[in-house]
Image (cartoon, rainbow, N blue to C red; front, side, top):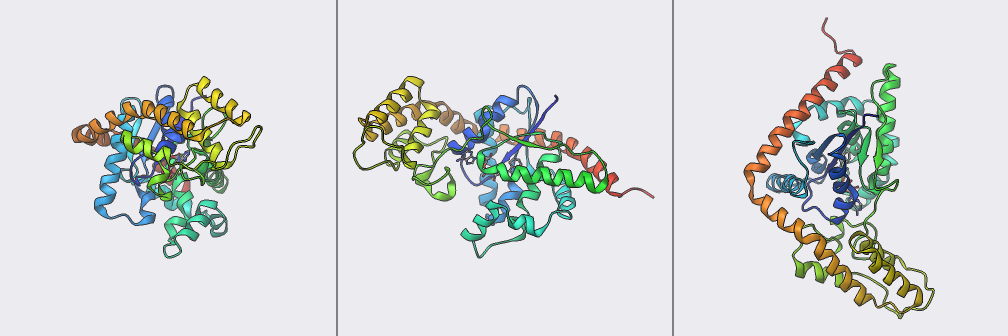
Length: 332
Ligand code: TYM
């Protein structure tokens, strides 16, 4: 089947390990095989009211990082969401068939409403509608994302199907989240809580350009178990998190060694963290240097944005013309 892959990342600062293993790693894999659209979700980031300069810096940074990590504007369409106003038009159409009740039940909305009670804006409520617009605008069928986006994809299918039903057409296809193998990835944070996330503070995330000393310090301070290990002990959440991080960057025999020493009760978490820090540095070093170089190459980044905008608007324009026709916006 001819799959179309669509995905995006919000420009909220530097990319971290969760963004890489949840999303970018698969972007790199798919750009060689499928028709791909990867963008910077800068409209989405407006829900938290960035300053104009801050927004501009973050968008530039994510595009530079996309390029540094290996996304190739010749192989995929790489663009800024705000360069494609058709996204906003489709968002408007889909909003007419998205209901308050279902939007209020979305977990990410409920979490945000709790964490930012003074800023529960309409953009936050309709966030999944904008995401659906991003995806179905290019007839996306596969969406490489981390586990945290699963429910949003469910909503995107609902909105695509609802449009088809309302207008009695078979126009939009259902998009599905895609991860590694048949699992969506969740990279844990370093502070012992849930997924790695910028909002959990500096110490929670490993950024793809963290300097060696910073990287080492963060990992050595990661939450683990304090008490002595005993044979056959169950892995606590923070300990499982360490194993999950190790699984991303360490060799199989190293992972097996620590697994066995955990089972035997002889594990030393300090040693395990030292090993993770070493293997992480090995993984990050080439990325860091490419990110630093690309950030300086403003011409390359600007050229990629322009090429991407043109390609994305071509695909988006066709969809919007067809959607307008379906809805009944036709010449007399
Ligand atoms: P965002 O910017 O929060 O995250 C970007 C991508 O990184 C993944 N991710 C993670 N994966 C595994 N473990 C983690 N700890 C982790 N943290 C982040 C996310 O799952 C995501 O794939 N709403 C989206 C952006 C978006 C989008 C879209 C995505 C807007 N429109 C259309 C796909 C299709 C978001 O806020 O991602």
